[in-house]
Amino acid sequence: MREIHITKIFKYLLVGIPFMRITLAYVAASLVFGFLIGILIARLNMSKLRIGRIIAQTYITLTRCTPPLVLLFLTYYGLPTFLRNSGFQIGKVEPLPFVCLTFSIFVGSSSSEIIRSATEAVGNSQKEAALAVGLSEFQAFVLIILPQMFKVALPNIGNTIIYLFKEGSLAYTIGLHDVLGKVLFTAAGERNLYLLEAYLALTLVYWPVSIIIQKLFTTLEKKMQYKRKENVTQAEEKLEARVKEENERTETNEYRLGIRARGIS
Image (cartoon, rainbow, N blue to C red; front, side, top):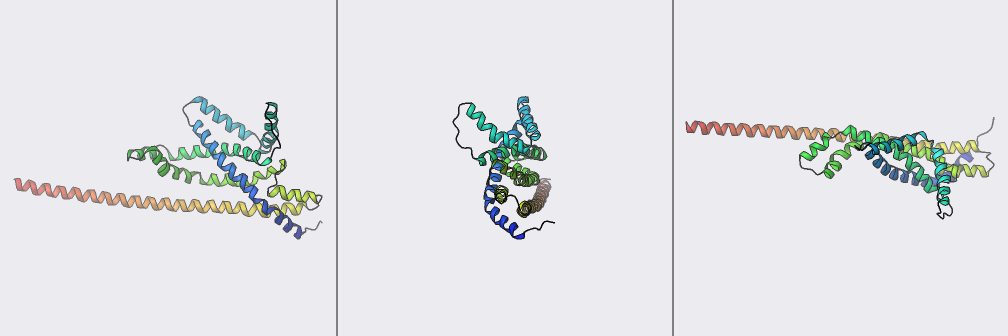
């Protein structure tokens, strides 16, 4: 049986960890641009225009039916070729922008469904109540709708981040030196004699980060639930105090009217 070289595992860890910044960069960029795409797709999907719903549903279906690796290759190799054939002058193609573009497309699809389901879970009654008490549509969205949507969507947002962190490892196939790419390219330079150690080192990177992200979102979700209960309790106390005040005012007015009636009689 082949011996596992512990020193090689630590060597690959030390080689790969500094390139975590590349991984975090495309994860953050894909999240931002992906959710911007998702907002647009969700609006189209919930619009009254049939053509808008068709565009949104076609986008979601095509994205779900395309493997990430296939879309990555289509983006990285196909898009520059198409642009060159169209007359655009393109120099050296860097892989990082195409990785961000590819995963922004995937996040746009999943986030549109997250936004749509969160919007439907909150409902229009909250918005109508906020408008009835004098808030503008923007204030109603920011103060009332958005916090509730965020709470509903929080678990799915955490899953999306973990998905990006793991599936983004496919970027090494087009030459990106992120954590996985740097470790595997280093192992290739040693004739792939220590691939097992390389993958064990990568496991020691991906597992802890994924667990931390999961625990972070679980804790945040619990805190938001506690805060919501606290706000509901405060609202109920205020409502009870207001009802009590109204009852006392009514009793006082009835007492005064009774005294006045007796005085007149």
